[in-house]
Amino acid sequence: MAVRTVVLAGGGTGGHVYPALSVGDAVRDRGHRVLYYGDPDRLEGRVVEPRGYTLRPVRAVGYPRSGVLGRIRFALALVGATLRSARWLRKDGADVVLGVGGYVSAPTVLAAWLLGIPRIIHEANVAPGLANRLCARVASRILLTYEATAHRLPGRAPRETVGCPVNPKVLEGDRASARTRYGLSPDRPVLLVVGGSLGAARLNDLALAAARLPGRTFQVLHIAGPRYFADVRAALDPVPEGVVLVDYEHRMADAYAAADLVVCRAGSSTLAEVTLLGRPTVLVPSPNVTDNHQEANARGLEAAGAALVMVERDLEPAQALDRISSLLNDASTLEAMGRAARALGRGDTADHIADIVLAEAGEPAPRSPT
Image (cartoon, rainbow, N blue to C red; front, side, top):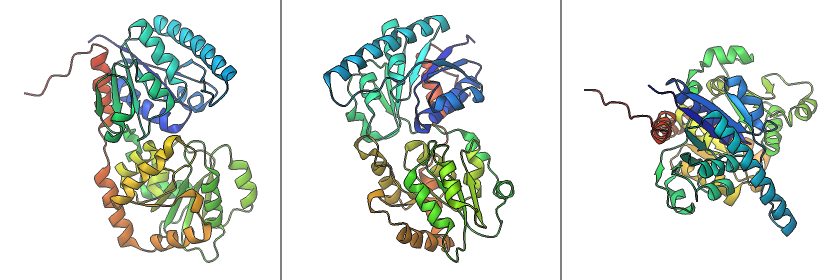
């Protein structure tokens, strides 16, 4: 078997980085070489190398929303980043590029196009981001999480709905050992509040209100995010009984395993994890995303009975906590939500995308068993 060199490109948030790494793991497990092209000053700079991958530095080039001078600077910066990416691709002998979105993906995908290297893009959300809308014009193949995205991307590349890749290690959490690790009681319900890889101020406010709730009958596991942790820790000092505060969690399998109910954003990566695990959720979609795509993501889970959606602009902590408390005291409803979530989960997406990526790189398809 010839060893192929696969380049993953993209980042900035966990919704881009972690699905890419899940595919990278599936490719690497088959004996191929995987490199990551991303911005060392963003999330990928913290998490890629600890996962055992080489990170090639490519700076993110953000598109200005207005101003002629800003757009000229953007164009010049994009050309420079694309040429630098092309030099890396030639040096690394790349066989294929998988772009997963985020501004930093564009230079590498465009460089692959200039060099004639196969290039695939994966769009995680219903409404595609600007980088993928640009890269779709030069892509060899387009992979989607949601069927509804197909008509929103330009270009003539064939497209396929595959879902959002999830690291199967998220299934490895054990409820008893996870609760022991966090110092949580095995007998009381646990509310997990997590705002994604970067944290979320409004979710932190909700978690603080939950921690301070008089007569609280449930425990709180609060992953505040590195940006907010110090302020949240100061606001909560001293930390009440039955509350655990974490800045960033590298072992999300433990956090999910400990939880009876999850309060989180509605990015596709998070939704792919909670549905695979069958976790009931309260979803608070981020309003700071393209075309409000997180609410579109969330409403699909709500319609299936797997989640409760709370829109951030209407969120009142006291009212939200009344509903959350009621859910945590209603085991039958939580169980039904969990079943509905599990019915939506897909655990084979990373392997399927790995098949597609390696086929584009020239790897023969595996033989069917006889």
